[in-house]
Image 1 (cartoon, helix red, strand yellow):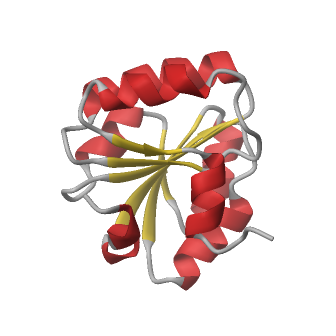
Image 2 (cartoon, helix red, strand yellow):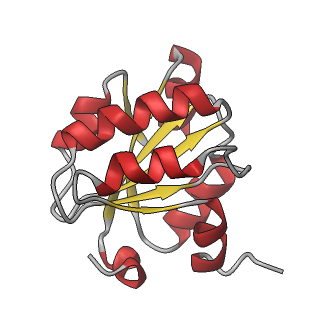
Length: 138
């Protein structure tokens, strides 16, 4: 999948590991994108539902309901949790999928995250690349 084609996929996944997602979700919905979401906590999933995101307590359920090629936004605040989620996603997604890192910070060891996805044939765009893609860079 070409990263510039991400907007053509109208149903995308949003995996939140406790990171703020509301601004990103609004931006995506404004582009006509439907989101299927996962949140760690029940309260977070409830907030997703209130924002029009079809939320579940299972990452697998989100992935199974996404069209091909799959596009998943992954947001986190803790690098270790983010890496664990990356490994899980790498095992669930197929070659040609796209993972967009919507986290607000750069990771200390981004090569571990990137390698995890690249080994599975999945394209990964880090926070800086996502910022550029969304046109948010200054």
